[in-house]
Amino acid sequence: MSNNPIKIVLIEDNPGDAFLIKEMLTEAKSASFLLEWRDRLNAGLQWLTENSADVILLDLGLPDSQGLDTYAKVHAQFPRLPIVVLSGLHDESLAVRAVRDGAQDYLVKGQIDGNLLFRSMQYAIERKQTSEALQQSHEQLRSLTMHLQSVREAERASLARAIHDEFGQLLTAMKVHLLWFTKKYESQKDIVDKTQLLLNLVESAAKSTKRMCTDLRPSIMDHFGIGAAIEWQAEEFETSMGIECKVTIDPQDLVLDEERSIALFRIFQEALTNVLKHANATKVAVSLKEEEERILLEVSDNGKGISKDDISKPHSFGLLGMRERVYPWRGNVSISTPYGGTRIKVIIPKGKVSTC
Image 1 (cartoon, rainbow, N blue to C red):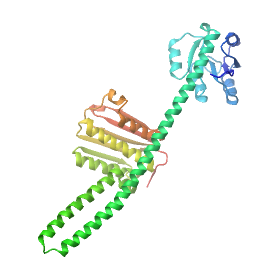
Image 2: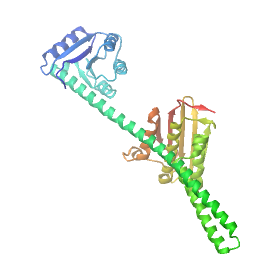
Image 3: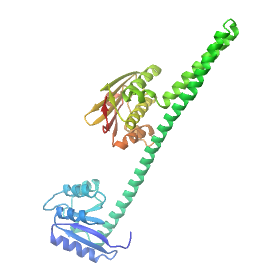
Image 4: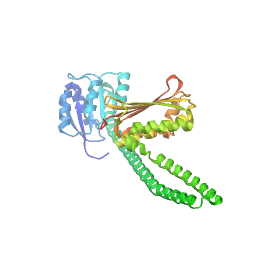
């Protein structure tokens, strides 16, 4: 910590306790301080609104606020300031709840001295600074993740267009020339047979090209929206994997912005991948709905379910990726196991959502 005085705001209604706390701090030799005392919560909040501080010493029992509500009000208004609770009550349950809610420490007035109080404030400030640094680092990593996802989607879309335009046109031209050969030399069976073989290969290459373009970026989503894209993906999954996939879209003409559409579609693809790899399911039910101010996507299967340990595994990157995809809108992904199967529920605030 720096050698500058610690700026302390004491919110305490008892003048005697306030005097004792000031005397204790004066006796502490480890650092200097500047103490500002207010005897009401509203007065303390008003002072903090107009001035800066390093730490708050907070009594929970004030004339204008009582109990943990007092802490909650201060924390809600000044979440970045470390708060040390000073209480006349030796209540372990209250102490645990206060620290769990974010208080840096819980001290009983009759059981402290100046050095203990000063160390508690110093540690509170250091922990808060460390916590904020970690939070900032976490936010930077999340921002990087979102940026990389955005770049990846843009690259996939660009690559899909390039493959479609260049390889698609090339294969179409080859097919036209081969058809000309079949007509030109239709009387020569060996040439016709060889040309037909080449035509079959070109047709197969065209189908593979189309499939690669669709895997990279399904054009149906760009042209017909997220509902159509999910219905198409479900149909493809049912056809190729033999797992019944029932889809409900409400409303049918639901329109989402591109970012939310991509996020939901990739989450849906990951959910289907999990069904295929882990669920041993025979049926999947999919629901995409607009509900009040949010969009809900649910994917349920009748498989063997998923354990809590599997959900919380640090290397469950598929599930982690789902949660990261909805983070920009402070969305939520929950996983449960009703009736033995697995249900993934995705909620994204509606934001810029409209219907055609």
